[in-house]
Image (cartoon, rainbow over all chains, first blue to last red; front, side, top):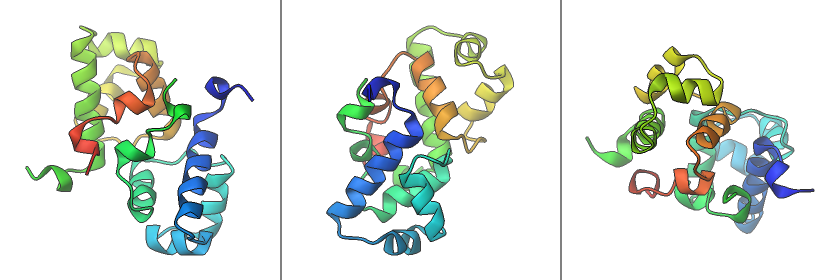
Length: 78
Length: 78
């Protein structure tokens, strides 16, 4: 898939999954830390959620990275 | 104001305003390019909108920066 055409929801979802797995967190674990429903994490990781800034911030904090670091990958550099 | 405590909506709003002014774009001009209502740009810049990923992407594209670059400031590095 052409990365630049990839939907932002999918890019964010894949980045959440990548960071979650690096931290050996389950979806339940991330959902608990971010105070969202587990099914919501599943949807986000599959690019099915047009999440808001505040939910993004809670997820990113739960993944223990800065917002700058979260978006510092080639998918977001286009 | 303690930057780390600053609300993400306000941080994003200030970053939009900063980039918009650097490009000598009016709020109307940015609203037109991002295909959103002008009052919406005013609200965003004042931290009053919990914008979604898709609106964020349209604003960032209209400001002609990458997503990585948009979030690459000290406010987002905490």
